[in-house]
Each structure stands twice: as C-alpha cells, then as structure tokens.
Length: 569
Ligand SMILES: *[C@@H]1O[C@H](CO)[C@@H](O)[C@H](O)[C@H]1NC(C)=O
Ligand SMILES: *[C@@H]1O[C@H](CO)[C@@H](O)[C@H](O)[C@H]1NC(C)=O
Ligand SMILES: *[C@@H]1O[C@H](CO)[C@@H](O)[C@H](O)[C@H]1NC(C)=O
Ligand SMILES: [Zn+2]
Image (cartoon, rainbow, N blue to C red):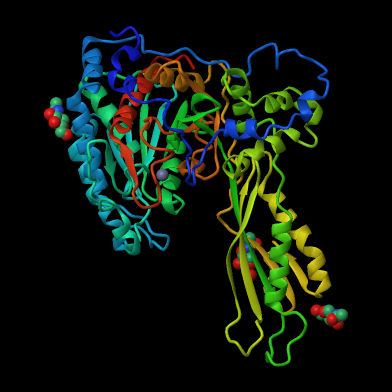
C-alpha cells in the first residue's frame, strides 16, 4: 500500500505543472480571475481609505482545504491494480480504448427525431457494442439496463443497501462536425489519432474521455475483486448536446423511481477543468449552474406598399427594442449562494497573488452588499469571469419582412438569457416586459407578455421558450459532505499544491435532470490536462485530450469510488 498516492505518480510529477495558464474558453467555461490583470489595473483609492478593521476576513477559515484522502481498506489485489493503473501498459491500453471510442461518430443533431424512428441514432448501437467488448468485467458483473434504447444504466449493487449510491455520469453523444470544417482539422475528426501526447477527435475531450475513464476504473475494480458496500451507479445519456431529455431525462426518472427523492449520496458529471489562477492551481468542481431562458419577441404591425411607408414599421420597432436590451444589461451580483463568492474567499485565503483590492472588498462585503462593489470589481477581470455572476442577454436570432416592396407585417427576434445564481426565470421575464412596455405604448401596440395569447394585429408578443431552466441549486460544500470526499480524492491524486474551490458553470450539463436525485452534484473533469489550455477545443475543430489526462481520469475514479465506499455520510 503506498504511503500517499503522490509517491506513485512519476508521470504526474515530471509534468510542467506551472507553465500553462489555463483559460477554459468554451461553453462550460469556469475560470478564476486573471490576477495579474487586476493588479495591473489596481486603483489605490480603496485601500488608501482608512480601513475600519484590520482583523482577518473571519475568525474561522471560509475555505478550509481537505487533507488528501487515500482509501484505508485495501487488499493486495487492489494495490497491484493501482500499480497497473500507473504502468505504461495501462497508459497505452487506455489511449487505445479512448481512440476506439472516438472513431465511432455518435453525433447528435438538433433536429433528431425519436429513437427507433430517426436512423441517425443507430450508430449508438455500435458504441454500445464497443463498450461491452472493451469492458467485459463491467458488463458481466454490473446489472445492465438500457433506458430509452441507448441510455446506459449500470448498477453495481452494494452489500449495504442502507447506503445511498454513488452516481457517475457521462454522455455518449458528441457535437456534430460540420462538413465545411473537416479539412480544417489537423487530424481527421473521427480518427482518434494518437500523436504520442494527444488523442485527437470529436468527443476526445467532450466527453468520451469521461465515459471511458469511468468504465476503465470500474473494470479495474472488478478485476481487483472489489466488493462495494455502497451501490455504484453509472448513468450514461446519449443526447446531452441536444438538451438531454431522451437520455438523461429518462435515466433520471428511472433512478428517482429506484432510489427516491434525494436517494443518491453524490453525483459526478462532466464539468470544469483544473486551472491556474492568482498564482495557484485549482480544482473547481462545479457546484452550481446558471439558469437559461430564450425570450421570443414578435412585433405585429401593418403591412402595405413600401413606397408610402409610415415613419416606423415592425423592423424599426424591433430595432428599437433590441437597442433597449443592449442598453440595459444586468449588473454583476454575488449572492451568498453564488459559488464564485466562495471562490473569491478561497483565493483570498490561499492564493499568493490574490488582488488586495478584492480582498479588501470581500472584507467589507457586508457594508457594500447593497450595491455589490465586490461583484463590480471582480467583473473587471473580463467577460469570462463577469458572466460567472452576471445574467447575460444576447439577441441571437432575427427575421422579418418578405419582400423589398412590402412593409414587414411580422418581425421576430430571440433573446438568449443565462441566469445568475440568486435570480430566476421570472426575474428575466419581468425585466423584458418592463423594459418594452413604454415602446409598446409609444407605437400603440397591445403588449401580450408571456400570457400565451394568440397574435393580433398591432401587438407586441413576448414568449418564453419551453427550455427555460432555473439556476441549479447550489451544492453544499461544508465539512463532512461529499465535497470533502471529492476534494480529498483530488488532492491525494494530484498533490496538496492543488487547491479545491467551488466552481460554477455558465452552460448546462445533463445534471439538470438530476436535481431531485441528490443535492450533492458536482460537474468536474477529473483528468488534469497540463499540456493545453482549457477544455481541449470542445465543440470546435481540433478537439483533443492529453493522454495522461485521460489516464488520470481513470485513476481518479478508482480512488473516488473506494473513498465514497468508506465514507460515513
Ligand atoms: C506503449 O506504446 C509505445 C508506443 O506508443 C511503445 O513504444 C511502448 O513499448 C508501449 N509500452 C507497453 C508497455 O506496451
Ligand atoms: C390604438 O390602437 C387601437 C386599437 O388597437 C385603436 O382603437 C386606436 O385608435 C389607436 N390609437 C392611435 C392613437 O393610433
Ligand atoms: C396556450 O394556448 C393554447 C391554445 O391557444 C393551449 O392549447 C395551450 O395549452 C396553452 N398553453 C398554456 C401554457 O397555457
Ligand atoms: Zn459534454
């Protein structure tokens, strides 16, 4: 049995841990502030003002770091298996397996029809067969259920049915590769090409890495004769990239039926990558997700010949409304439950180059909470950071008019909103309605605000998309919660230089369907990719993942499942 897992991590320790500045770019962007930027733009006004108190932020730490957690119960087989997971043979094998999964193009398209009817789902049978061939131990030992044909639910029943299960998630589908971009790829998108450092291809990083990493770890546990006390559930959807209702939507219903409301101890799904900020390395498992709503706006105004136009027509009024939206953005706001507030406390307590202006504002947050000076200051770090605690609004679709010689009778546009923690779908709808009321009056348009009214001439109609989603409940991170198990597992694998702080996702994952199953939901990318910034070009050309990062996901799960098995929760 190794003294610490770190003793066993030569491949990790020779990696250039501090050379890359991680800056996740994609939709599940989770970042800490660019500390150097803030310090460069440092304004002395705040700290030169006399400070009422120089006491520390609080008498008790707001961001205590959990000690590395190594499973205490072991056997020779489990230790030998751990050695194997650290070997070059396993490294090679795990790359070969992921590469094979990437070669199966399980693309999910926005306009997919139902499973069993739209033939584009059939490719998921190939992936299902591939998983079964690749992980014979898992498929022989765990109960296998197919939910809505391609949803994969694997259950390893624990000996103590009184313990709530651990649930690990990933999705089997990938974002389509548009034909027009295929020749921009360095290696073909479904080649699974291994260049000695990276595995290339669509899905390599989102998220067949997670899918295969989980299965590799469980296969290893099966072969090492592990016998779980706590039930382990693997739940793999197949349409996450097109909202997840056929996969995760159905899987979550099955799970809630089996285990009941809050019946799972913990859920870990794809999510935020480890990153570097304020001079420190961070794991920032997502404990929250912003909400979502599209508002569709329709302007109905009289048509007629364009040679005798009125002063304003539907397109002009729509333009006025769009200008109003852009002129009235939401302000940054850090509610008590916003994970980014916790991240700031973690930075203030642990990071060497945390900006002193932010530290000062954190200290005085109770006095300034009403105008949220802290949020305004933190938002200066850039849009990536700002939108972790600010509702975003963007007009993304527009159409109106059919002919150059006819006035537009119907003009529509859509505002996409990502809702800040502490706000709600209802706040967004009333903001838009309030903003547009004077314009409706000015042009004598009847305002139908979110009342499902049928369209009438001379009206302004507002509708909310049925994909609306409230911000996710914030996962608890206090002592003795599953957050501690996740933190301890992560620090055991990567070392105590890696700090763990709560993170927040600006995008949504399949976990949106699982809120009822557990309050302990984490969106975390377990493999630490030290060779590239951010999330490895997910959703764009040249998606890839570092081989070592993929291997490490399996090692993380191998530890986490055992730690959860021993945890007294
Ligand atoms: C792993 O693969 C490399 C080639 O990528 C090969 O040189 C090496 O011998 C392999 N190691 C083992 C143990 O199979
Ligand atoms: C406003 O519209 C109503 C019907 O929608 C009409 O009766 C009224 O005359 C209009 N007023 C003006 C000032 O155009
Ligand atoms: C909206 O109106 C239609 C009929 O016009 C009705 O079928 C539907 O149930 C209504 N939806 C809601 C949410 O009220
Ligand atoms: Zn994904």
